[in-house]
Image 1 (cartoon, rainbow, N blue to C red):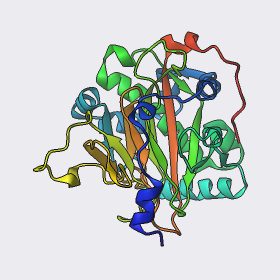
Image 2 (cartoon, rainbow, N blue to C red):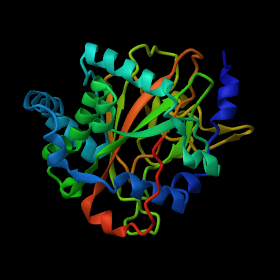
Image 3 (cartoon, rainbow, N blue to C red):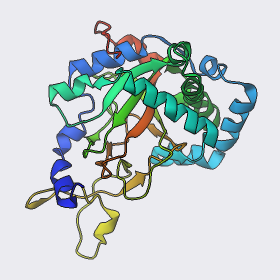
Image 4 (cartoon, rainbow, N blue to C red):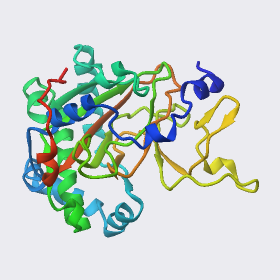
Length: 309
């Protein structure tokens, strides 16, 4: 069992300028280009699930949730997958993992920031052809989320969304695996390292997660604020401390990686991280979809690289 002190040391904060930098290298941008190269409109992506499932998804994403996404930059929807589909899709993911398809992320090899996940980029069609039909259904469901967001928000920033055919399958094991704080894209459009991402959607696939297991998605929900003596530190990030030095705290939300939980947030705005896994026999599975602004597709200037497992 990993002690809390050890976890603090593992998860100490990066410098603020590194967190705010978004993609840390040209490799990040090239990877994003490869990922987003094969895409379709949000509407077309939504037509790959049956009408009843799409209707339930649209009903779940209420106007209040749309307002929260617009105002705070994130929203969490629970129980988006029925119990049996979650169980079967989890089995598919375990089998796919056991076949050796998941590899260390290229970003981790650069040493730019710590991330301990192993990943594969997969499409609904590819996993369905391998017999993983339940996983294929969940991927198709996840790819329908951008259309639902587009319809509910009715804002300019979501009107030209391009949905990749591939999503990222990521696994964090029980050895204290984590992912340090980062953004999924730069706050400013048009930067050389702008990777086009505007919406991030993550579906969690962990039917056996329990409180205390770790692996929560930690979302920074406001600007960094000064530390006052009368402020209850429990509202701040307890992982964000260096030995002998208190880093300026921020308010945060921890999203449990419970199976069926869906998180949607603005890729350019939300700084986020994965809290270290505490339970040694727990493997955290997540499916991540990055959605691009169609107008930003032309900003990519790097050759397509093959990062598929």
